[in-house]
Length: 248
Image (cartoon, rainbow, N blue to C red; front, side):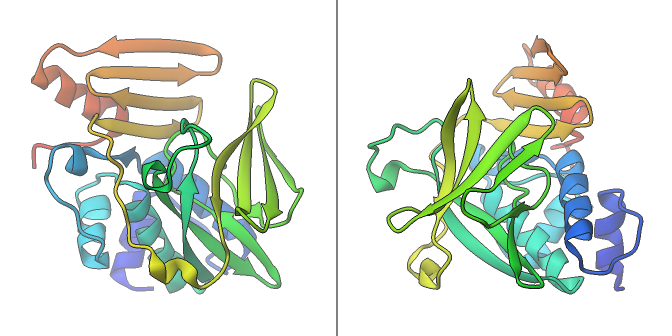
């Protein structure tokens, strides 16, 4: 194991055997989501981003930042390949909070991973940020995947390809959809037009979210909201709730 892999595993606090199985994939995915936040601060602050592995490793592992779905899943796919997994990066249309008949250019792009174990493929995704599966989801039409109070299901049709739904208020809502073919070459990463500063991370008791100067702490059924009034308070809250420091 090279030094970078050791650093990565230490950062996400993983200890254990590294045989590339679906069990290991689930452990790494969960650890990743509990340690590395989704955040768009470089984009929102017009700082620019890079998708190269050295740059992503420096930002996310060395500087202990987070990233958007492209950054997080590209780096996670690199880790998985280094550990011997068979991984395919896939682009998807991200439908959460999007109107049903929105034009294609208004539908945010997303990246996810398909990981093959034996003859079965699994969705593995560390780039959603908000509620989404923490464990690999078998790519089987009609399959329902439960994690605690959360319930997801996979469906397929010719028009939309593979679809991942989430159960919200007793109704199935499309989270994202993608085609499992070689047509991703026609896409290029299209970053979100979101100008708000956003950060999200899972915790063992719930999740933390931030939009601009509002921080929300979800623990079980309780919600606590903090609003920062100065840049100093915002930076302190960013460090406290997401372990992100912008004062390098």
